[in-house]
Length: 302
Image (cartoon, rainbow, N blue to C red; front, side, top):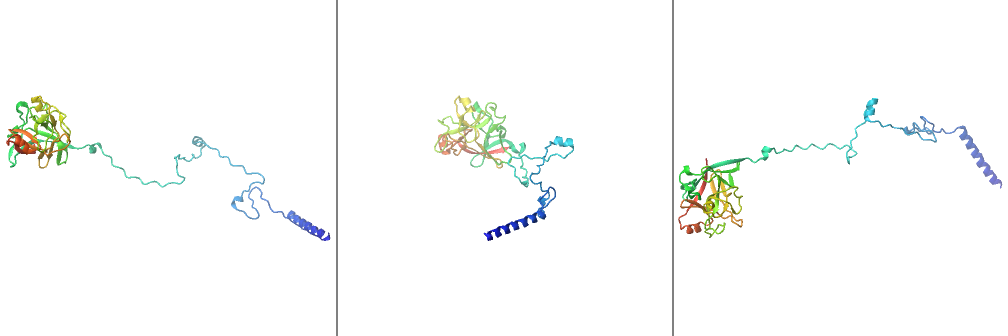
């Protein structure tokens, strides 16, 4: 009992000493203004708010640029409203070099018209004559020995192109039927039952004038009015874009297209002064009983 009383007495005595010590020298509490806590004064304690209440939040009044101009204060900074814009400043991408644009003049294909006569030579390279302008009986185009009787033909090709392939030939004013049949073409032969030529076939073609618009290159024959049908009143298949010319050498060939789209070798012959084409020279010679003459063509520009 006595020991417990002494213990309680000592505890009360220590508590009384501590109370008097704290009352005599109290620890400074933070006060409004520039105060520090227990001698430690970081920057964010420089303006410690009064105990028990918060410092009021500053009120920022938004002003439009018009109001700022009226009040003489700087304008608002610009706001860039970009969709999905990044939060950092992106370095500008290098400018791409300007792409050249094709001008209308460069996009347009330059062409040139070439006109001349067609010379005809035999297998001995002897000049036999020219594709003639006269059309006896208003049907056939014949071989003419004199240059003055040659018909002028014209075709169009690209500038700088050496080979003009499968182009139409336009007959000039010397051709007596130019107004009705201005294109030089190949016409289905009178004795042919179709428009095909080739090996072991006696079918042949005849040089003649053809009406516009003619036929596209490398396509089977179509029925168009022509100088032969005009004379015989029998419809015939024709092709007009059959001529190919080397503009440097003048060498010239014809290319016929069969009904199945095949292109057989096409040979030029004359028989009694009339110009023919065939796919089988031996068959043609047999049909004409050996009197036909094989010819090569050469374009001579005038």
